[in-house]
Each structure stands twice: as structure tokens, then as C-alpha cells.
Image (cartoon, rainbow, N blue to C red; front, side, top):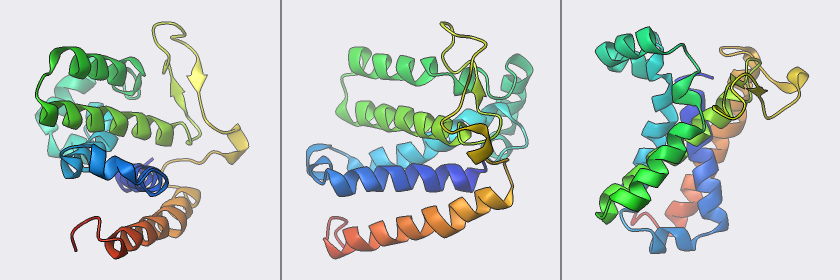
Length: 178
């Protein structure tokens, strides 16, 4: 999935959840940074690919990581966001940092969900328990290739309008202070 697809999916999933559970905004401190961390986290797993959007922005980090890990390996495994969540809840006392790490971990999980919609899925997602199992969310014939017309239809004709509708709904509800 492309960077735009990952961000559109992450924001649509997050905003849809907030639409259903509107108390999240009032109960979660530093909500704006939580959303920003989700968007950054939705791009992060591709840092191991120098030609990806985030890989181009963090070229040195990407080159080092790609020399250590193959694409869609460690940065795409479930253990990474789980370790981040454990770290946040057991070692971080600052609420702002905890909320930011939580958002980042959720963004990584949403990135992985997007990659599980592609033909390749994610091999080793459940590492170390099932290191050679390929995980996907849909049957093969319903999945798409990255940069395919199917992905563009999903991103531009489904996710983008959904994001726009949700943002307008929240603006109307004055949750954003507009």
C-alpha cells in the first residue's frame, strides 16, 4: 500500500472509531498529538524501504535498516507495537509521551492492516510464534497490488470521501474548536 493509502486508512479508521465513541476526545489528553502520532506511525513500518515515502525522508536511517532487515519484516511484526505499548505503560510516567507512543503503536498496527489487504500480506507478522505464516485480512482474489487501480479506487473513492465526511461532521460538532 502507498503512503497516501496508509494515511487515508489510518485516519479513516481513527475518525470512524471516534465517531462511534465520541467520549475518546474528552477523555484522552493531548488528543491532537495522539492523532498525529497515529499518522506518523502509519508510515513508520516502511522506513526499512529506502524508496518509500518515509524512507526518502529518513534516508540514512532507511539505508541502515534495509541493510539489517528485509522489507516487511521486523518493522511489520506485531511484536514491535506490542513492545512499544509495554514500554509506554510500564516505563513512561509522562502522560503526553504515553499518549504519543500509544498513537504511534496504533498507527503501526493500522499500517500493518493496510499491508494485509495487499496481495503479499505480511509474512511473519506473528513472529516469533509463527515466523513463516503469511497473514492477510481478505481472500487472495479480493486483495490488491500496491499502485494498482484497485488501491487507487479504495484510497480516492472510498477512504478520502469518508475522511472528508468525518472531518466535516466533527467540525460541525465543534470538537476541533473550529
